[in-house]
Image (cartoon, rainbow, N blue to C red; front, side, top):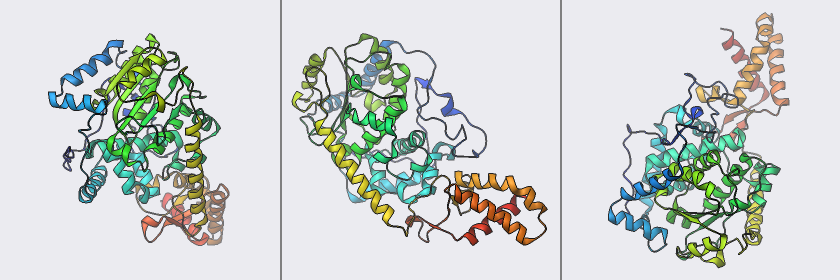
Length: 470
């Protein structure tokens, strides 16, 4: 059994970097706290934005990076990698105990709390909306397991996952797990294409979860439809799946029939940014392709993959049948493969899994709505009561300040208390008519939010008028 990675001291907070590419939007800074979660181009900085390459990678750079990664390993480590790829033995399995898990979860939360605020703004937004969501033990454990209990790596993966989630799904969905109802018609069409599949029986000979992405059969309207589909699929595959979390997954990117126009360097970059933010690790990653022009983008995948993934990467060139025979040498039998001998996707089993998942999601959501006594998390146009920068910079509070600024001239000129109350009432009604609510935390912050009375809301608006007129 492998021992957990050593935790980092409180002063050793670091960030992940990509050696091959730098995205200008990722490194930009406005020098001050962003003024609006929804509109600030720095805060909403496109986690999977189009990259700015230092140089265009050659087709051989990725292969060279794999070789260098393997050469950097000891003989024992290299044997462990080969055995894990072939499903013979998994040296990365960590013996977990309740005490070790509790300690690791505590260390992870402490580590994140000491990270630079600008680096974890999506996390801070989510924590403001629902402390329960970001402190959920099962949620945190997924990220710890993905990085073999290396707290620093798990922290970066988690905050990057929330940055990605914010970019793909927006503020209103940050404090909840993404469901079928959170996706638009084009997103759902991409899922129903069944080109990305997992299900309980889809395992290799070692019993590990297999995720197949038939990229040559992908059909989606925009890249973001594809990425939202991938996010929904992967999170559904990992949540509650102890086998996949502890043993890693075997990934198969089936690119037979894929053109270089559909999978170029930019798509490869964005795809790896997404994958490296998800709560799983690859026990093995196989790419099957028949187009020699894809060697460049595949090289980008190899370059941008983490060191752990890179040495577990294998590329197979040939027809669909030829690639299937090569995969059999890695414990991946044809009879469990969700692609038929001529390369068509077999959707039946995955559609059963998808229907069950959608039904379960609907039942959970209905139960949440039936509990009218509790607001689990705010919406982006709600006004939140509380002190501090996080509250002041919440989108609903920003919108309230905008309304106050619009009326503050009239408020300043008002000569009676009744007139000022009427102006505050106007702001209150404007916010409520747009669907906004005025919320304060429950006595126990983990229990969500409660609405305040109109009288209390007007008092807050009047106080904000006085503060902004000073």
